[in-house]
Image (tube, rainbow, N blue to C red; front, side):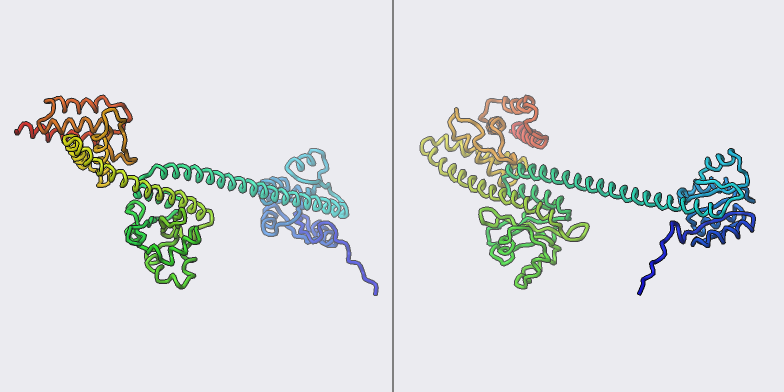
Amino acid sequence: MTQVPEPQRTAGAGATILVVEDDPRVVELLHIALGAHGFRVVSANNGDDAWKVLLDEQPDLAVLDVRLPRRSGLDLVDGIRREPGFQQLPVILVSALAETESRIAGLARGADDYLAKPFSPKELVARVRRLLARGEETKALVRRQAELVAEVERSREDLRRLNRELRKELWVKEAFLSLSQELASARRVEDVAATFLYTLVNHLGVPGAALLVPDGAGRLAAVPTPAYTPAEIARITVAEDSELVRLVAGLGRPVRREELERFPELEQELRPLVAAGIALCVPLVTRGRVVGLACALEKLAGGSFPQAELEIAQSLASAGATALDNTRLHRHAEEMYLRALAALVPAVEALDPAAGERARGTAALAASLAKELGFEERAVDAVRADALARAVAPLDAPTGTWTSHEGAALEGEILAVAEAYFTFLEGEGPGRAAPDALHRFFEEARPGRGYDRQVTQALDDLMRRGEATLKAS
């Protein structure tokens, strides 16, 4: 059986052609001629109707007579070229005027071709096909240009995204380095918790978090940090030997709540965490020991924690764990130091009772001053230890044998002046020189020494009370 080949599709076949002509005979002729070649023909007999048909039919090509009622063909060309949707529409002008000026005027307005009447329908069809073929090429080029523009825009967006990610990565590294430096110098668990939680809360975008540390009674309890730890999670405690702690520590990474809920044996332990809105648990592990457990609330914007944020939390936990372990070592060193001092004073008293008594008195006075300045109990102990160490040290021993990062211990100059002042108040000092020395010390203090207004006011209050006491006596 012989297969009959399909007829080859001609350029523009099936395209819609708009014919605008006020002569009905010409319109009928063009309907027949163009229709015979597979074109769909729509028509209008004046300029105003032509514009309406143009908007309604969206033709692929327009054949316009120059002289039309109401609106000329040249005016229609002007309107077509100004309309964004029709700027690429092929236009053929037809006119009985064959003068060069008329042809130039039509082409100058934006027409693509010009035919003078009378014309051959075959010639018109040929020109229509040529313009439609060129129009298809133009449309293809426009589409390709749009694709290239979209591709360039996607590439730009990828570059912007990579730039944002790079900036974020650099910012995270700088923040982590800064955090590590701050944590490395922290000596108190409260300082470590505040610095760690501030960074964790900001990186994860959560309304709050708690840092649970061993409380000495076999449980992990929240460190008091009201700025970052809401009351509903500040009361959370977890047994150090609980399944939850063992599981999270064994994984050694931040664990989402939904992951923990897959373990039926954790149901009882998870209830208080779920009730408080905890969405993430971050273990702080160092030297194979759990030194803390960070619990973060659900994100402010909702949703889960992406992998990038979990990696940041794990890095923060590593730095926080080291800092917490350092506070334990520092606290142990403090206790050893205080025990050594406590053992030293009786030995000094045995050799020189007056020196031992003076050491105890100096330490008591320094602790009293620290309390007046509003130091907490541990800071007062540090001041007492520092004063005791200075009092029993040889005269040529270097000062600053004991200082604490949070500024708990006073420097040697303040202790010396305060000791002289308290001695003066007891009637054993060199007259009124002590108060003047106290004023002179602050007046001559080098800039940047860090003696804030609170310290100055507290010492001034002590002076005024002491002078009142002397006047009364």
